[in-house]
Length: 328
Image (cartoon, rainbow, N blue to C red; front, side, top):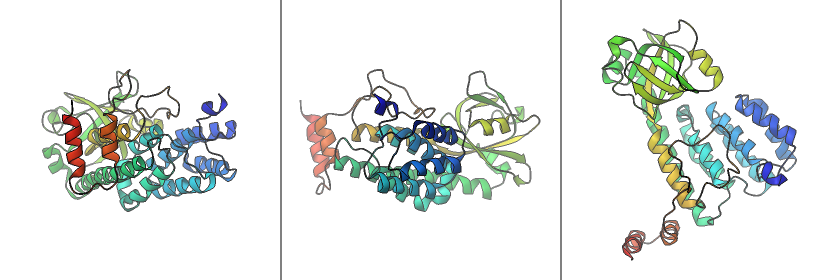
């Protein structure tokens, strides 16, 4: 029906919604934010557009603005609207540069959970909120440590440790959405050993005297001998990487594989099973990992209830889970 087509979040003017999505997808945060606030002032919201705007703000390093938008949405609309698939996509889109606003991460997760729909009840919201704050904090801390290492240590030492590759050139990959980063022969065996698929890397113009210019954040797909294949970033950043004659430096930051897997497991525990019909899915924000045609495999209902049970005394939770797992 019409409501499902609009994202199930209360509808809103379709032309406005489309312009918001286009602006968010292009990284025009101010335009997208203005459009979304216009909808909210009318007491309307569209969940997919909201998810895209929040993710765009995160990628731009505007964690405080993202939190403020979520809080405003809850106040004006007065009801939860975001499906867990949207919540998960937003958390997965959290960039490494967000560590600079690490102190605001807890408030952001709280605001996000306040606007989410919890079909499994309030215990699921409390459990998800608590675990997600810890996962985000750990992820951002890893990014902070890597960033400090990148700025404080010389690139020569980092290269010997396998954390940095320098003097690389970029070209179009063999597959759509990939960029091939060619490593000079003298670095093939040593400098690439510390970088592997699933790593998040920062790419900056190579300057022998130190870091130079803005960073581009990418995810490594695979390392093949003299090439590091990265998943193409946003188009404007991909265009920068492809500039003829530019030499780049690549620094290993955090590994996102464990972060994403734990978030997906958390969603499986706190939300209904199955991938559904795609309603509420944010475009171009597919979650990493293998997809099951049968949908998510959830634990037994009794185990879910035991996990979500609030404040179990002592080791009662562990004892109950052991008993449930041992039951025939």
